[in-house]
Amino acid sequence: MMHRSPGGRVQVGGALLLLSAVGSVAAAQRATGAKTAATPASSRAQQAPKFEVDPMWPKPMPNRWILGSAVGLAVDSRDHVWVVNLTDSFTARTETGANANPPIGECCFPAPNVLEYDASGELVGHWGGPGQGYDWPEANHGLGVDPEGNV
Image 1 (spheres, rainbow, N blue to C red):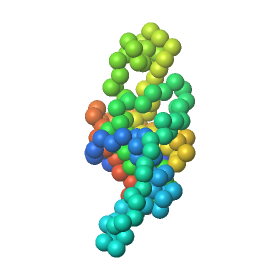
Image 2 (image 1 turned 30 degrees about the vertical axis):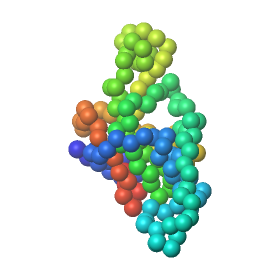
Image 3 (image 1 turned 120 degrees about the vertical axis):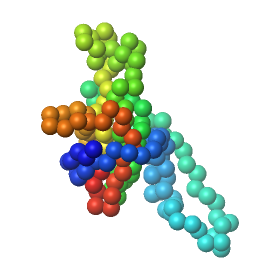
């Protein structure tokens, strides 16, 4: 199933990753200049970078949205973090009462399926879910960003 996003295409299929850890890893790699390639034997004595999870990353979302189970994550060339999440992984009675019909609480609503965060953790884009003219998959699984920035 393919869906054209504002920046290209979405490919649904992939692996489960932790959102806050990737944001912290990307920031730490920028700060330390860490590389993903293997290091030569002569530099093995160097101290490995230390990574710390930032509990305040990402920043709160608008519209009383909450993040479902994150089933895919990617970082693009601009250090934007892309997340695909399951919007039906909540317990309506305790987590998404505002989304019930009729509402049974003031909080919350499932966030859209695909979320884009900038490096500071600000939500800068979102899309996905069922729409007119196409079917959104019932079980999202992963996403990726190619070198041209297509999601």
